[in-house]
Amino acid sequence: AVVNNLEDAHELIDTAISTALKASKPVNISISCNLPAIPHPIFGSDPVRFTLSPKYNFWTNLCRLSNKMGLEAAVEAAAEFLNKDKTIIVQPDRVSITNGLKHDNTAYENYHRIFVPVGHPLKTVEPKQPLRVDVLLQYIQNMLSSETTIFAEAGDSWFNCQKLKLPTGCGYEFQMQHGSIGWSVGATLGYAQAVPEKREIACISDGSFQVTAQDVPAMLRCGQKSITFLTNNGGYTIEVETHDRPYHVIKNWNYTGLVEAIHTKGKCWTAKVCCEEELIKAIKRATGAMKDCLCFIEVIVHKDDTSKELLEWGCRVAATNGRPPYPQ
Image (cartoon, rainbow, N blue to C red; front, side, top):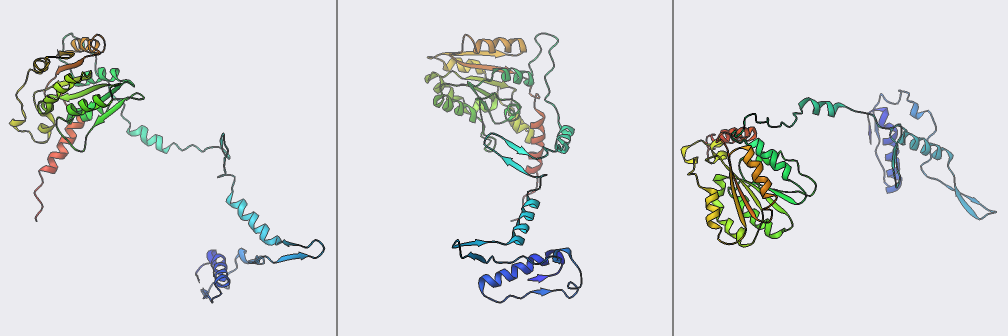
């Protein structure tokens, strides 16, 4: 043991002596030359005995362990450890904290300083105005319940659907790490087949739908009743934000006409909406008279109607992709 200060001296010396007694081996205690002359209150009292010698009572034929100094030292140490300012009493039906909780508003103040409340879309003043994505998202939010599951396709739906507040029991499926364009069509098909008691709400864009539209016939053949919101903005928006080139502008399809052409048997209903009034009617019909049908709603929006999160993400990815290659 090496003793360099008085604060640790008592503990180090006792530890060394106890080790010597337990192991029956010699120990080396090194004490700085200036320490013995320094007074310290911890050495003012007599040392506590290391071992307790039993006291034998001849008349009762019993042995009793007694060490008053050791008992007092143990009580003092326990009292110091169980300081009333930090005592927590755990009982079966409650937990008691001595002197109550002390309020610390630092975390709340930091959060309140940077908190940005969720925005709400402005009410349209004139009728038949072009539909915006934030308005569509608000109506999808009102459709969510414990009996629904939302599917977020790769692209702007990633970031838009992250803003939804899911009620208890509502499912949520997305695949951010893979970035597989068109994933949600097949995922909706498989999920609806595995969990028939829920109704799926798929948010997918036109570019992604063109990749995996062949899964729609299987949905009809299986008699599924999911709702697909196809956002038609005329291109691969997520690709445009990372690498804007003419080949990301896709050939527009008649998406509702395609689904109707596929629909030869089974229950299916399609609608094309361009404004909020048409969206309200389409959702009311999809959740009402057509609740047992496969519903396909094409939503026409502007090609630049993009979330700020996608714009920021696209800039970061574009900067990363634009770096020169590492030398091999």
